[in-house]
Length: 329
Image (cartoon, rainbow, N blue to C red; front, side, top):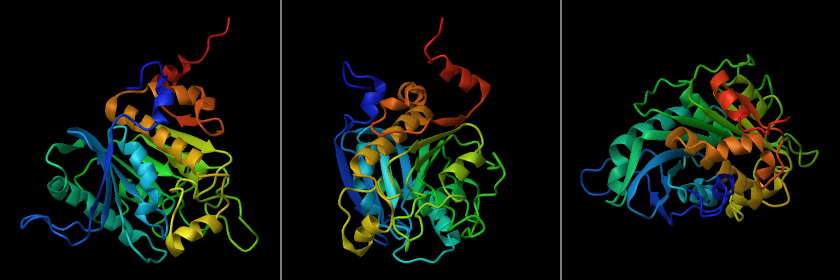
């Protein structure tokens, strides 16, 4: 719920009402004598108040660290979600197939092992789970949702978010397993899906570097292949790395500033991304569509300039949004 006097769309772009606690679960570290080790190191942002909360699993981008998304995860957690970001690898090759299998293993571990690491008065609601990923992490999330791995998971997803997802270097140069088929609405998934895109992701930073989210393998193609219901928001003046923390250290962190075409600052894009994800999760996991429907109809309410939002929905959902438009005489 928003603060008194605020519109729902204002609320989602501001920190929520929950204080947030950050936890780290190292790989192969046990908690007590009977707790199984996590398959990968995990970074958690969770509400620091007693309660049961929906879960968001978030996969990082290519060669990035999960800690680079701390501010984004904190924003989401402050609105009443347990946000979990695995560190999928330190170094990896082009093929994402092992990564998708690891993602399935993490999902299975969460069902059995996560609660043992949480405060006793904080409980994950595994009936309401969402999955998201940035860049290559978006490819991993879609790969898991579309069963592009032999590893099965019992965890069921109620929402899917691609944050500037990337399927390879260019059309015809996709990495394995190929997610995009270039057939409209061909994804065999009924999970409600949100695609968040960057307007500058397909722009080269300089003649020496390729674009970080090339045309033909990025957010527009992912949205085009989604089944209903699916939604597409694009921030015109921001780049592929503008979702990250304001400060990202080390060699990997420094490279995030110089490899991609960026916007003027990360904070507005990160706040938009966190807010639109919260609004979407509120629809899918909490049956609260107020903020999300408002942003579909009034994209100028977002803290960044947006292209006109796109949606691929059923007639009933379309009519619900149409009813929010100003009536002409």
